[in-house]
Amino acid sequence: MPLVVGVDSSTSACKVQLRDGETGEVVSTGRAAHSPTTPPRSEQHPEEWEEAFAAACGAGGIGAARRPSAIAVAAQQHGMVVLGPDGTVLRPAKLWNDTESAVDCDELLDELSGGAAGWAATVGSVPVPAFTVTKLRWLRRCEPATWDRVASILLPHDWLTFRLTGRRVTDRGDASGTGYWSPAENRYRVDVLDRVLGEREWLGLLPEVLDPRAVAGEWRGVGALVAPGTGDNMAAALALGLEPGDLALSLGTSGTAFVVSATPSSDPRGAVAGFADATGRFLPLVCTMNATKVTDAVMHLLGVDAPGFDHLALSASPGAAGMVLVPHFDGERTPNRPDATGTLVGLRSDLTPAQVARAAIEGVVCNLLEAAEGLPGAQSPRRVFLIGGAARSAAYRRVVADLTGQPVLVPFEQELVAAGAALQAAAVMDGIEFAALAAAWGLGRGEMIEPDERVDAGGIRLAYARAVQQAAQ
Image (cartoon, rainbow, N blue to C red):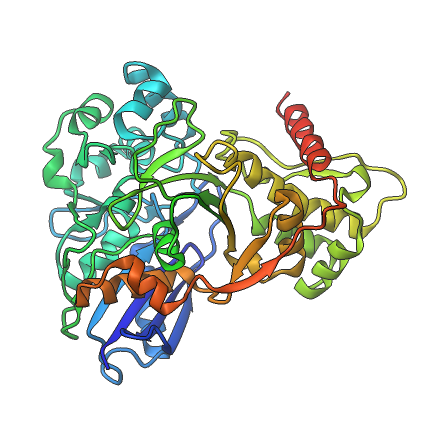
């Protein structure tokens, strides 16, 4: 049977899956951690990703023991990897949640004609500190000596693919999160780079953007076909078999909400990122920086473990007796509040740990749902998926179902990014349509969580919106 490998190189770890390319059955898995990071400076050295990838493959017996036919890499979006003329990494990669480029982002918005609306019309998205273009501007401002030596600019998944194949390539999905590639026009906007970063031979510095079904090369030393790879959200959408009308809510370290669209999107307000997906379509997406890391922090503050935290949150009544947590602990991307901190309002002398736990989960979920309001079709979705680490939490499942007021599908497959990468590898290897293979593998099947109609979802979300306004004053 042909074996395929899917790689998920996330902020926290590298996870690999070896699957049967025909049935999608998992043959083996491996995992290796990355160093933790904390904004405003959030950086990792790309060599650490490669070391974690090798360790994860070793744990899964992938390579010499189990030789795959194809592999694809999915990874955290936006990160800035800069190489010198000899291909060596010049400095640690700035990650998506690094907010040191906030001032650079503000300057960029003023330098393109039309401001935010001009950016949205040109590249489909309005830059926020997460985007690669803002990090490049930061590098030019803060480390000019390094800036002058840059000979190649890659994203995290690009860099791992480069290490596998020796080619500097990327895909539409990940390229669409840079702030200088247009999904609607399917090309780099060199004119934008010239305007905001200065004139250079940009096309020589940037990776080639491959079509979704192209082959990136061969895994050196193993001989496996290497698919284009993609960003983590695009890989998750691929695994789910997401179709127009579906809404995916992903709650991990960060929160994302996304839909698939046949047409490109452009939000002049900047709330919705007009990304491309991994199939040739488009993936309008919103992102919040604060998700499970917020509830993890509150869990440790309360001195309980994860099951204990779930029990506390579920034992409190919906609405947490009027207590509201605004979870902008380390700054926020949507809404754009890079210098924000968290806020807890509605405190009373009879507060309980259960109310605090419930308020933390409701705050994280409300934060993402408020952001998702800007997505096309998200107000009345055909299906709602809950994915990411929080999908394993009974309390998160309950709160998401109650606050959306709709049945929520929680897939049985927990590692959807790695699974989506493996699916891409299999589809590219065998020439199978992505949707057909996703249906055959059945990665989108799962448990349905029905909402409790007695919960005043509108009241809870309104209280949250008011708390955010108060925190922003």
